[in-house]
Length: 198
Image (cartoon, rainbow, N blue to C red; front, top):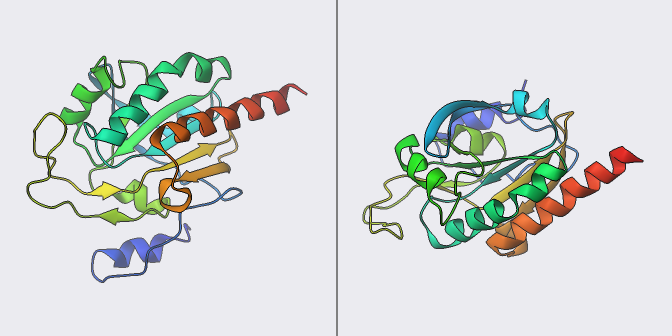
């Protein structure tokens, strides 16, 4: 049984101390959810994605916000490099699929290069030990639209094919930039590829 289950069951009822993000060596919780690629919704499964190679699961606060726009653009620009080492990218936020359909197709950001998934209730984020902060009325995105959902701290996990986490990059802990998440994840999956080739 997932060691975080008691926390998940209680978190909606009482205020609990923040749970630390899962670290290298721990098992990544499996998840399936709705995602969008190039403006089209589909069912994403981490288990299925891992059959093809390592997976970069990156949690971000919200589509169409400054840092998240930059991070998505950086992943899109480097997508071919992730493909070259057999790695899948999946972004996860509390955004609705309607918002993600726009974001995933936007040529300035995801550009139809990789999928972004909806974790509307925060269940996936919490299973990875991430803090979920409720949004406030009036928060608007870079398009001027009200966001209207909760936020998860920016954290990137690199997951090997055996479901083990091989790296965790957190802006909350390391104060790294959105672009640093991309370069660090790429370095990790490249190392995995090189190690496998030896």
